[in-house]
Length: 484
Image 1 (cartoon, rainbow, N blue to C red):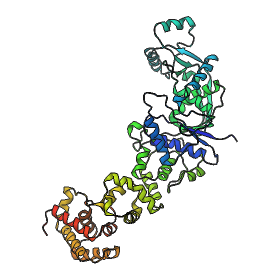
Image 2: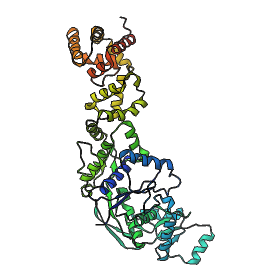
Image 3: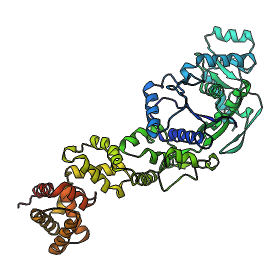
Image 4: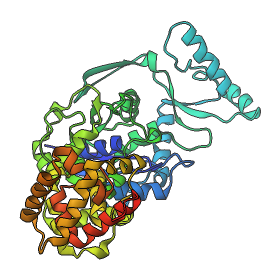
């Protein structure tokens, strides 16, 4: 069996977002499954106006953060480099020369106005817009006249009326008609090559065996197949992944705020949870109850179980899987995961030693899904947050005030505070004030944290201790205007 070689080929025009990361993941686990193949990282930076080294580094950092590493790439030498398209100009020029020599390329001098007029005519006739081959039969003297007028040609690939057929590993047998496609541009008037030629040449020269990419590239596939065949190369197998939709049912895009992978990692999400959640975007047999490592996903992966239907990104699924991941990691990993997010949120580390922080985070595992909520709850351990004006009013009613005052008195009398005597203390307060349920717990939580929801009160109050709890209660009483 031929060595499997796949590639992830991002354009460095922004950070690594969910849709692109899903493509990288599927390529990686396909290569590292029973195929034991190579995963190549190629940077498609032909868009010189938008491509930046900063974006390239952000993409590479995002992949590394997910644990996705490559066998060949811009920072790892291989036999098929260079791995940035901006460094492969000579390779593309050789391909262009060969295509001109065999008659598959010709110069096109059409202006944008002429092309737009043709498009409008075709649309008015209820036909798909395509190039009308205005320049396909120009003779040398006609070309010289156009060039004398200052027109600089693009280079177009000559198609004809051939049918292009291929078997997609996801979408099955697909056929395109050359008549509907029309001759397409492979090199711009400034001499730079376009995406279609550069990508086809790279896949051929780098011996890529499988091209796994988004469904939005499906219409590019027949063009790239024709280029590879014309150059005498071996056409790879194609697998087009279903489009990823947002929670609103619209396609994700960088500009519309799809999730940035590094931001998810920095927020405290487990890389295994992110990868497992992404795997469910179009893979029908992806695990849905637990987070898996890349090796575990690779051992399960089968490209034939990728669906054709659009996949919807679901933050709740990510949170659920992240909760499963957090339930199994060590306390030390929990602390390492949340230290940076807590620091950014302004958490006061001076109040707790690492051992106490380990204990606090460990006590919160059962509610640890959305890292943002975990950070918010951890802030309540660090300090009392400001109440809203409505919450302050709630604290002034007779029942709430009696609960707060009884709690303060009980804490003044307690010798030691652990979960057992805290539970007994709450029972006693309930009996004395005749308050139960939310009428009992809400005033305590508001007085101690400033919030109506948060970590378990027994974990919170035993962690911060009776002295600080009393200080927070005193501050609350001052704010609601109660004099002791």
